[in-house]
Length: 294
Image 1: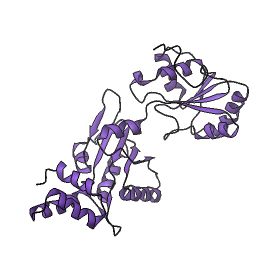
Image 2: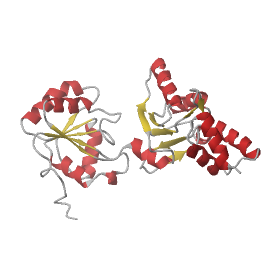
Image 3: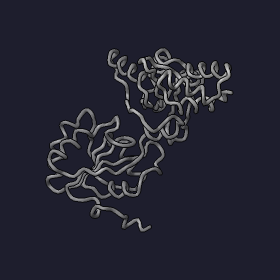
């Protein structure tokens, strides 16, 4: 492949008056794409959360370009200046400290304003901690809800935790080292210690670690004396009865054991519980096979 002439539906990049949303590594600096390097090297200006952190990335890539601070504290003040640059035919790149901008990071305001002013906004895909954690977890990735960081206000936080408890899709949550122990204990009290959960830290970095596969095991294996790093939690969805009550895999396994002990086959037991609970038969059957119920 000729990297100087990549296949693309666009013209030669970067283009004039285009805003580029550029994904950067979440840890391992080798994860950046060739296209992202080209954009960062050749745009008129790079808007970034922290000029020092982005500066270190550019130095590693042997790139010299202009940087401007653009974060949650100053983004509104910088919007008009950045839009004016697009009006003048300049090209702009927006990056976060790590991963994809806008995913629990700044950038939404400039994207919205650029679109309202009829400028093209092009995403240069890159690593994302949420998706990296999800596909590494072993938990169902077909349907999921991304929550990012939970609110700090107690009432808002409680409402979101309740939503996670009731969610029948996989939940993805970010958390800081200082609050990770409290979050795990809150999830234990709300969801029960058998709820499937995988905790991942320092993704793609030297000390990447995975803890799981349920809340109980994570709490047993985690070191809380001096927690460090960035945490991503992947939490399995709940199961729901026809009457609206929620049922855990633990309770399904108990019911399966009793039915199989009474003489039903795995298939018949799964069919009976599916009709009773509303949980799909194939999910219950897979649960019986996974737990070697005979």
